[in-house]
Image (tube, rainbow, N blue to C red; front, side):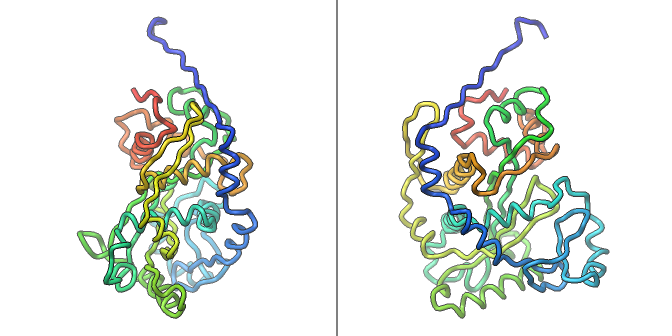
Length: 326
């Protein structure tokens, strides 16, 4: 490259002085997250037995079994896509922490109410007579903007042990078995029916719609599915659709964003980003795959799904505004 063609990029990043105060006001207390995690249950991949702790596949860390017998029964199916996990504990621990966070789960419930128009389901069919399915694509992104820019715009090396944070990159809802979507697997159908029966027996929760929430990390074949009831509080937020008040770290000014699925995701991502002390326990060391996805995002010829989804996120969220793309 000719010297006259080279460009020097200066990254200026400021943190609004009120951002940490706002984070502390909205953050789910760490003791609440810990208490919620202690009540979480894991379902056996083979027989659907639910227990607080199950054995995991030591190679991929992405399926769980209640016994060695169940693991052996599932091996003929599982071996076709079992690959070694880059993270020692897989993605399960992060997902468990995320779904134990009241602030973040409330936003996911609001997203479901908006995307499926649950507030106008007067006949109470969706989530009552039949389930809805939510897919959330999550990724691990550098926790500081400078490292993201460095990965995205340059080929310069970054620290081998680079701190990352969980981000919600895509939210998609559908009704299984309708509009061309495949029906639920038997395992997921059993999960939904079992949880629906529990809600029906609870006088406080029986009027809450229930679906399933699938977390996918970096478009892998591995996913984690959990029940997602939509409580009355998030339904009220979706009905009122009060706009988000956003703070600019560069100008210090506030601005409004209408409440949509996209702005709810942006709120969640900014909330995690504002957690400088890792109070939410949603920060983790980045893997080489995590770094590669950010590096590839600038190359529009790369069609890998996780890369495309990251580009879409960058196009809609304010923190990436003004970042060179070409």
